[in-house]
Every structure is written in C-alpha cells, then in structure tokens.
Length: 405
Image (tube, rainbow, N blue to C red; front, side):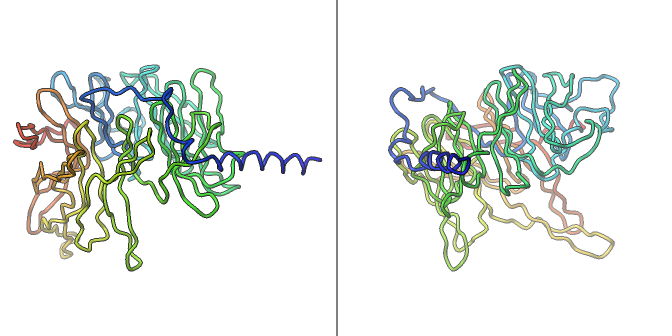
C-alpha cells in the first residue's frame, strides 16, 4: 500500500513539471509595478547597499563607504578595537575564502540586520555590528569563534522574513533549496520531495527562479516562494549570473563551437510575455575565456565587463622567479537597450573592475583592484574608487579612495 501511495505522489509531483510554457508567464494580476529611473545591480560581488552605507570587502576585511560623508571606514564601531584579531573584530569575522557570491553579506530591511553564511552556519548581526549570533547551524558544531571550511551551504537570498539558501544533500547528491523563517525559527525544505537536480536560484518580485536538471535537460523554472506552483520558462541551458530589472531578466547566452564554450550575447527575457531578445553581441574574436559579467541595468542601458587582459609587468618572488600580472577588466561597456549600440564608457589600465554602484551627484563607486605597473615590483591591491559621470555617461576623473585599514 505504501508503495502505491509513493507512486501516486511521484506522479502528482511529476505533473508539476509538465505545465505548459505559457502558464509560466506572469498574468495581469502578477504584473510588476514599474519604477522609473531605477538601477539594478549584480548580486555576485561584495558590495551591499543600505540607506547610509555601502559595505564591501578589502581582501577579507569588511569595510564601508559612508554615502553621506563620502568617507571610508572599517566596519567595526568599537573605539578600543585595533581591527586585527578575527576573534574580537566583527570586520574580520566573515572572510570570503575566494567564494564571494556564495558567502556575501546581505542586508535585510525587514529587521534591519545583516545576514551571512559562515562555514555551514547562518549568522546575523545588527546594523552597528553588535549582537553577532548564529541563526541556524546546518549540522555543523562549534561556536562563532571557530573556523570552518564550510562548503555545504551557498547562495543566501532574502525575502522579508525568509532566508533562502542552497544546501548540499550528501545522501541524495546535488543541491536543495531551503528557507529559514526568522519569525518562527523553523527551517523549510522546498525541494526534498521534488524530482530533479537544483542549482542556482534567484528571488525577484515575489517569484523564485531556479535552474534545474530534469529529464537530462537543464532549464530555468519559475515558482511562487513556496515552490508549490512550478513551471518551465523558455530558457534552456545554463542560465548563469542573471540580473533582474523591472519585468525583464538579463543574462549572458553561450554557444558551443569546436568543443569550446563561447560567450555569445547579452539577452533579455521578458517575464510577462516570455519573449527572449538579444540586447547586444559580445565580440570575442575567438576568445573562449571571455568571462563577461553584467554589472548593472538601468531603464535604458546594460553595463557590463568582459575579459581583455592587459600585461602590467611582473613581480619577483623568491628572489629569481618572475610572476607576470594582468589587468583583465580595465574597460566598462554600456549597451543601449533599444538600439543595442555598445559604447566604452570607462577605460583605465590602473583599475581592474569588478563592481559598480551609482551614487548621487553624478558619481559612481567602482570596486576592483588597483594595478601598479612595474618590472619586478608590479602589484595588484584590493581597492575602491570614485569616478564622475559626465554628460555623455562616461566615467571620468577616477580616484582611488583611502584604504581605511
């Protein structure tokens, strides 16, 4: 009897994935209210915006840019702290370990707190850095002052009182999507009874978008935040880093050629109509390792970078070994959403760009690496910059801000 029951349940669950593609489009009752002159940003870096500060990492130390005063500082408000001991200074508690998008700190307006993954623990602290605590531990023992390699919890996304993450299921293999309710203190597994392998996911305007391998095919699916109504979108293959803006999703499409994968174009997927259109082509001249990244989308433009290595010299290590260094992302491109015209709006070999954030007074904050040219003493240091935005939208008069550490 139990076997029959399981079979019936499996059939019901499978039917979820057989919904028509048209049912995945937003209905009129789900229309996203458009907000004019808005800008949406890449979610895979270290920048995190609040009403008064922009948080960022310099190496593994948390710092912030004060949007009111224009000053930078270490994210620690203890006047007696020297910001050098990770066991006592909040600014050193959330090292990146090279996994920026996986362990990024997120700000939640719902309760005015920051959340982050540390090891396999979900942690939180208040707006001023106090009240650091473990919110939930995914089977990992130990206190906050114990290091952990982690590796089983990824991709924190927040929807008001819900903290969504990917977790690795060692028994089943692959990832699952769960959320922790900060109001009730309960964990909910959304995918434990569903077929398929789940990968990255995004939350936008009350919907959850996720990559899933089902019937040997990877595609993008859409559901409500409880994953009760699931449908397949028109996008097949790996979705990659996506940036949602207004009622569209912008992403990079790829093509296979001679057993190599090439970044082909920036695409726009309309969440209402289901239409997919090309914004612009990505010229790569045979370069398969283009590594494009969409930095921001406004109502009229897409801002992006792509890998174009510039040799900045070398440093000498161990007395005799020359280690050559490159600036891979010295240019910022802007594509017009209507015409598809692509313009270089920033080109500075001393700055390797990773992220941007538009400030008021026609300025833009640039996160990246300061590249020092040299024969034997070349170096790249984690840095933050400010540039002006001229009448043509170009980023000019860039200056490196002081390192607050």
